[in-house]
Image (tube, rainbow, N blue to C red; front, side, top):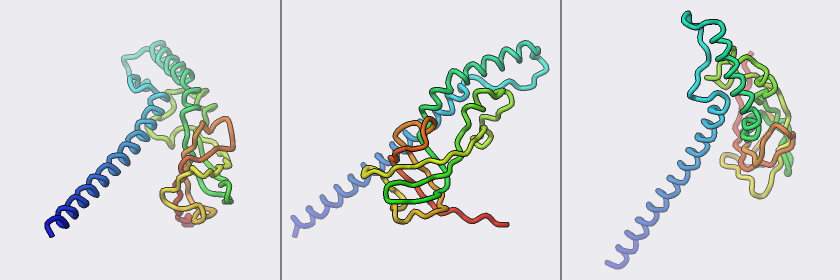
Length: 188
């Protein structure tokens, strides 16, 4: 009887230890995703610089110099930004066993490169210039589906696809992980 009690107690201890390890692993992966996102936004506008504000103490030439410096910083980082974006958010257009067609709205890097940084509010993603693109998302045996299985994904579902390479030089990407969710119909 005593041995059985100790065995159950040991089993419970190892289960709790395993669950704590899984929780720490999950949180670490979420922290890494957040760090990548923050690094991306830091490349768009370095965090140690702010956009020029209308300030009576600044001269026109000083404002122009600041705007020119920020444009140079932005243009220097466009290629890094282009290669670092590995996430597609959009709506499912078509689903097959091998791929999913996704209509996505992505940051328009060409417009961003030519835009005046003083006129762009970098504090919100929705304020950046966007363009529409359609992607063929290839499904592999390694593709993870944490929320829904492939057979449960339907046309019109919202979708977030994490891909293995950049999304700007291609319309065909290989999915690492796919998160799909139902989209509420728009009310008229």
